[in-house]
Length: 317
Image 1 (cartoon, rainbow, N blue to C red):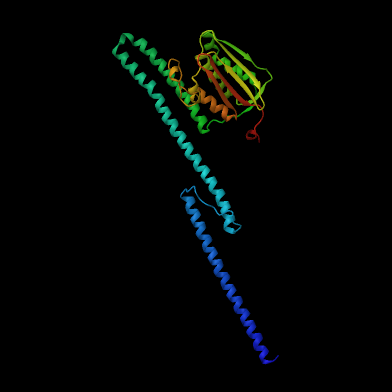
Image 2 (image 1 turned 60 degrees about the vertical axis):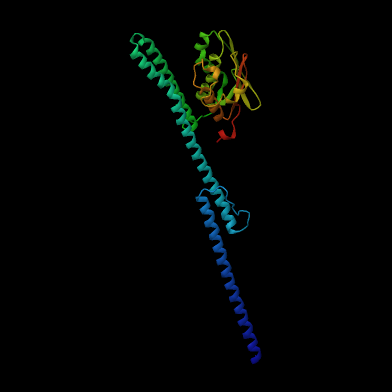
């Protein structure tokens, strides 16, 4: 090969080597820049996650390494947020329960103290005051037992386990709990339910839910009135309808009757603490059912418990 050609080839190879070296340096610089940017964004996102920021813009729409990683980070963050929200809700619930317990026990305790002082001041009436004290103790005991049930249901310590059961047996058991009270007021109870009708419910807790409805029907109905209980199948639910001839509920009060400790001012003359309907709704909701209420003052009320007729997906498996 001629000397001139050798120089040209050598120059070409040297130029190619320099270009390759330059490209390699540029690639390294670009990779370093990308890694620096990736580390910066990752650190920034993690810092915002740690601080609890709820307005994080994840770059998951980009088909890049950081985009794919941020998809996973978003999923982890959503789980963390759900757990944090659940803890906050549980804390809030517990604070409300403690506050409610404190508020509700004040009255019977204050009454007990008052009757005790009166008995000391008027010994000749000690027997009367002792009877009044016993009534307050019974009220306090009932209140505490009911509130324990309520708090356990709300915090998930008690699990409602719906199974296929006969609705007729449910109604029979619930009616037995209020039969004596109804008899004292000469209230007639009519039941219309097929013995073969079945629904999904936790037998123990649903008896209590229905008994709360019936207990109210007896308490707020007049002597010699009638309570009708009818059960039938709708498209997806079994409906248990309880109709009474009681005093009824004002229309503007209907949205509040399922609230915890809610009582109408007109009901102060009737014994109760305002937990029964709240517990009923909590139980039925945990069974994936719902409760309806209709009422007209001076005519009566209709409460309907809707229980799942078939197994919902959340109960399967």
